[in-house]
Length: 115
Length: 113
Image (cartoon, rainbow over all chains, first blue to last red; front, side, top):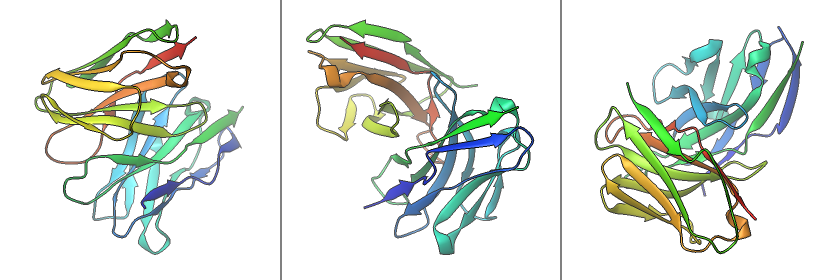
């Protein structure tokens, strides 16, 4: 069955430090790939997406993610974290299959940023 | 631009009472619509999705139902709430054609007491 794994439940970084959030998926083909961010009590906001082409994708708020087919990974990165980046981050995959219209989400990584 | 609304924002209901959560989308036509539930410390669980008026697909057997009476309106209901129905309910939409990215509403926090 298809699945998404975010191995880090909670990450703490200092403001200004670099960040990498890990995401691995299990699927027989290349899925559509997404990262979302959720602030407490809020809905999810789309950070970036990968459908095809260049495996390094740029998103909003200075985030980027790299698709690595050989590792079935889509890790999210930011070179310098700001205090406002503290939130929960979700990786999601969409399946490239007919009659399938849903995203499969990971369980999320909570990011805490220290000043 | 497109916007998605959910109401109410918060709701406290006793066990056994009915439920109706509403979601509406503006600025687009023929969207695909989704209801998710998010439990504390867990990811998002897809409950229902709809590709058109009156067309509902259920992902998880449960105490809830969904309806789509209009193109841009999606309603989540229950006849009798259970304690286990507590959670954060999110509505989402995506364009009927094109990419698979979904856009989420602000959510409804439901507490069943």
